[in-house]
Image (cartoon, rainbow, N blue to C red; front, side, top):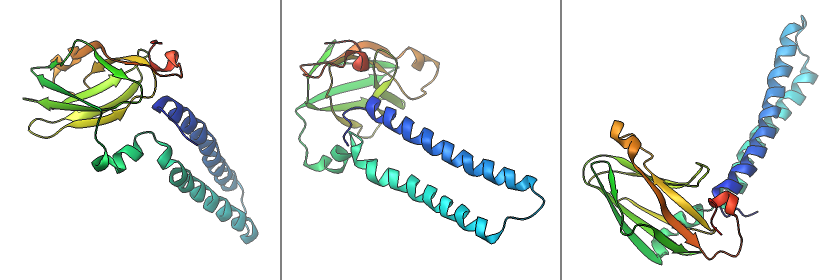
Length: 197
């Protein structure tokens, strides 16, 4: 099982968590039903209940153990010290304004890109968003500390840059349309990644 972007991953987890939620609700419903009965549940009924509970716990924990490595950015985070980015882009933020190295950052499909972001005054956010408003990736940018984000883009798209942290009312205007464009991917997912082909 492999997911190449957060949209695919979220769709899978949405389905898994929906099923899991209905299973949890069934336990609550069973418990509520037994509260309405005058007689206590017999020991023979308790055994299936605790077996079911053990199954839910094992299923929930197992789901995360077996899917943690399918998250696209986990393997890069675990081996980050061994990775040399293909390109590094230096971005500075001051007085609620992004200073970009270019009007639009062009990235080739599959490139490992490092965004090195520096704040000179407040805590800001650095978030890349698809045209439908869903987030691709983000990080917090703290003043006086190293803030970098390593990311591999596997789908074509044009992404907007927005702040993901509250930095006062002026932070609402921290928006750079079409800040990043990814080209050259064979797999066309225009709807998922913002409309570029």
